[in-house]
Amino acid sequence: MSVTLATAGETLTSSISPLTFKGAVATLRSLLSNDLEAVNGQILARMESPVDLIPDLAGHLINSGGKRIRPMLTLAAARLFDYDGDDHIKLAAAVELIHGATLLHDDVVDASALRRGAETANTIWGNKESVLVGDYIFSSAFELMVAAKNLNVLQVLSRASGVIAEGEVLQLATQKNIETTYEMYIAVVSAKTAALFAGASQAGALIAGADEKSEAALNNYGHNLGVAYQLIDDALDYAGFEADLGKTVGDDFREGKMTLPVVYAVARAKPDEASFWRRVISDGHQEAGDFDRACELMARDDAIADTITCARKYADRALADLLHAPENDYSMALAELVTTSASRGS
Image 1 (cartoon, rainbow, N blue to C red):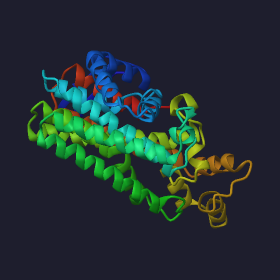
Image 2 (image 1 turned 45 degrees about the vertical axis):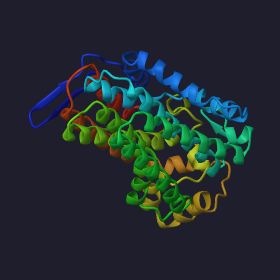
Image 3 (image 1 turned 90 degrees about the vertical axis):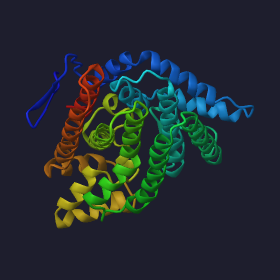
Image 4 (image 1 turned 120 degrees about the vertical axis):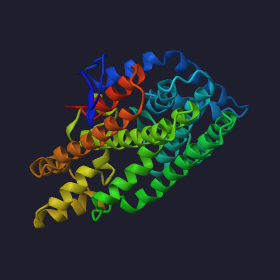
């Protein structure tokens, strides 16, 4: 797959061509291998504590097989603008710790038993323990941000943390609510998922001294990538494979989540189908065959196809954002990351 960006007569074409999202992640990881090793060292150092539960629980989370996409965005954005210091390592580690803390809190709020095929920390150690260790991880992230000695970066990442929390609260208003609109759901995704993608990318550009236009472009790139990434996850829950999704297909449905395919399907349902969606989502009463029925209705009404189309529109915006950055191996890898992310499962 060759990535070409074009707008207003400008083009950006990649010379590296992974065929899959995993290939794009591997390419980015290869470019950043030394930086990532240093990031892992920072994370491990921050998880040390005389309180045994903290390194045990945090280690379970950190070693659970995440792709490290968010910290790679910070590292790649810094290298994109020829940064040659080491503060981007601290910031990338902080970004991953913020993400880890939100996962611990998410699993408690959602009462999740599995993440990436393994038992969640709250299942093993308990809800109270997960919340408190999540708080500890958050504080460690802020220590790393302060250590970078850049007030603008601190402002960007602290604001992103606040927006994520707002997104969690906003999601409570849409949870099991079949009146959720497209606009409401995009607001949740923008806050819960895209805010950290955006902050991670912008932080890397900031620490590298990028100009305001480039800095804003990297923020927008991260936001648009984050929305596209989440919307494809939404679609894959109903029409994907577990290898693509990283979790069991149908989990969102079983948890009654109002993801975009459900929003579209409910809005397009025939009058006699409203009771089905109310029962399986709002009431949470699901029976054998309900998931298959939901998939049939979504296929009939193009709910999944339109979710994928929406995701690809955000991916196109992310590609256009990269036109405001230098053309080098890092911009090529970032372009392929967003392109393949939006084509997962296809």
